[in-house]
Image (cartoon, rainbow, N blue to C red; front, side, top):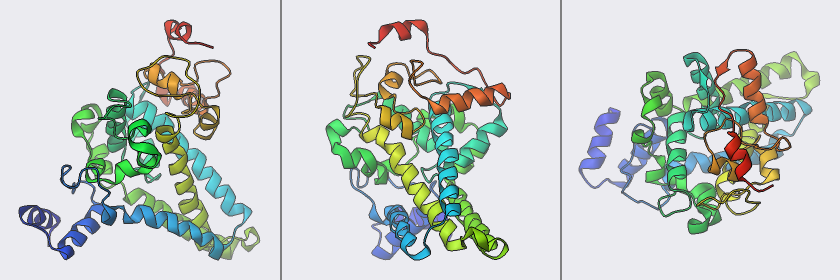
Length: 322
């Protein structure tokens, strides 16, 4: 049965349990097959969330495949590259437009960001724009003040409403067909990455056995462990950076600056700075506030890959405490 027919049939009449399962399976791959945001609002859609749960369970595979320096190096390298794609491009570019770049670079880093299994760039940016507009109010999708730690950390995006891309919030980038395609079929990128890691590990096992790795080992460490760690560190900005840390600026939300989170997220932990002035490509407003993402963007600018990095205005620098 074609996808459109399956979805229209499920919407036209009360779905049987088997039909609900089939529709949920379809939505694992085709995120454009969006559920009714009002149906089950505020409730986790466990069928659709099953792959997210499965990724965490797959990390237990470390006890089966073992560990090697090669696997740890691959996991760390993928954490670094993909964290930069999330912080530099998903966040500072797609959500806030704090610099300019070419269409090719835009799509390249959109694909790298999609490999993080944090959905497509348009979905991510649209939800983040909503967060800034309604931070720590009832319309904020992930406020720890109102909804608690677990919901703000990961519960909010597992609901029918959370799965949907709010196209009205992202018209500037929705005009690019390649980004719309990627946003719909984002799961293809992490599947391709996982497949490549497994094949690379099998080849290394036979061609360079001294490295002590295998297909299963690179898959578990390079993809599952690295991706799950990357996810949880990223979303601490939603859950922990609105509860723990210092406040240089008086904002209408609970955002905090947290040095530990800033180190783990390459600068995103300077969250109170960011909420006070989200229009800057730099989130560490003081010289001593380490912001690895900004340094990476400066390096890309030196090679002409990005342009027009927006700086922190002097008036903003003078406004804060400390």
